[in-house]
Length: 399
Image (cartoon, rainbow, N blue to C red):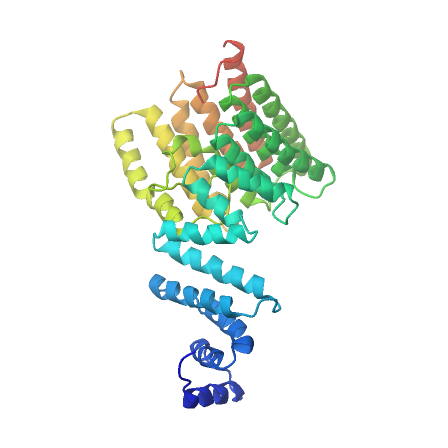
């Protein structure tokens, strides 16, 4: 500890004893000064005050979170809430590093968090970099150890990383747990049947991609049955599980995106929250170029490529706007309608039309419009079943 400025200490004590409420910056300065005199008492308060400042300038935020980490390390071992404070500080610090594109340093902080038993963030970062097998191993440890992360979202993330690693059957086994939970909760009326429909449709896509058309068809038919029952009994009502729809819709687009790497990270498909800021910015930042590409493809009448680009645009719109109920259908439905209209102009390409219809159906489920959602999914199932009835058993889907 350096020389103590006793005048500064006195001013800090007077500030804290004053009747008025100090500004946040004043509190930080006071706790910073007093921590040099009494770290046991003031290091925890400095951590809390620094994490509440959240400066807008990324470089200032980085410095603030680094100071919070350093203060957190000075909290006496065994002190109440030391672990939680240090974890919050490290989380804020790694987020600030990623926001500035300092990925290697951010990953190192996530590795430190994982060593202390908080591995969820590291799994997300590894998935962003295409290191799916390593991410899946962390997911499994987290889920099977019974920590609070053991939930449907955690299972979806685990299944997504197994699938990304090419372990399709293992991914399917994990995802069946998601379906079992959704089915049980729907039967007990603890959640909307919409969640089960989305899960079944996504599982059908997983099975098709893995070359198991029979299992894919069975999942589609169950989804159609659930949706038919929902349409006949629930009429039209809102669905409160938009995050579930967004998560699975974004995940369904992973195969259409470039491969992820540390140099060119992609979203942690399967995770709804916790994307690194640099990944989020790059993924949504591609919208203008994709929209320009769509304009060029439309002018050249290159419909198959246009349908694919239109879907990539839609997935980004869902990631950006799909969590907000306000004007949900009004904002997003025109995009899905256009995707279906474009796909209908490809009479010799039932796979693309079935995909567009399925996408719109799942969106309409999210919007609570179950009758039209059923009609779209029924048409998609007819197209896909008809295609498979003419194909060799076991032949992978081109969709």
